[in-house]
Length: 170
Image 1 (spheres, rainbow, N blue to C red):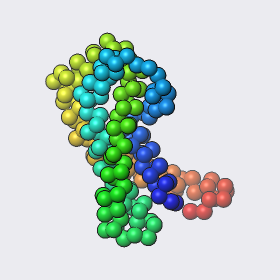
Image 2: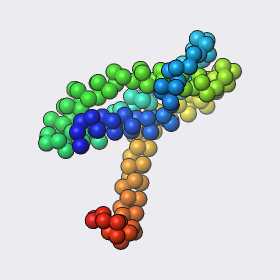
Image 3: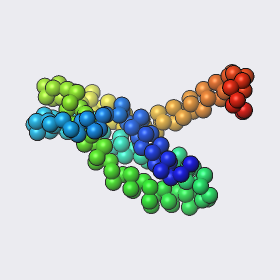
């Protein structure tokens, strides 16, 4: 596996964990009224989208270190490479993703709907929801990883014979 595949996997992870991936090219092509786009940007800001994207990048660090380590670097050097090269380079592109998400929501909702949703996220309950979501990213990622490991183990055990019959040796 080369570093291009590692980075592609990391970007896919951001999209899958952050939200449903918007059709970036399509969203960028559509003309959007500036006031409508501003309403979508307010919603993105008030829902903590930027902070959550950054948290996801931080949460991916461990996986990225493992992937770099698989290319012959020890854990300490892999950590430095991720911290000094890969994460900063990927974070530099987060504004592009935030813009694409903003355009996605602008295309998906009317200005009135965006304003209504934003009003909720500025309410005490909405602020609390964003706070809990932002704080929960590491815990939810850990839960998902633990679940995935257990399910994979169970499925591989249960399907060992079917996999063997298809030429997959475990």
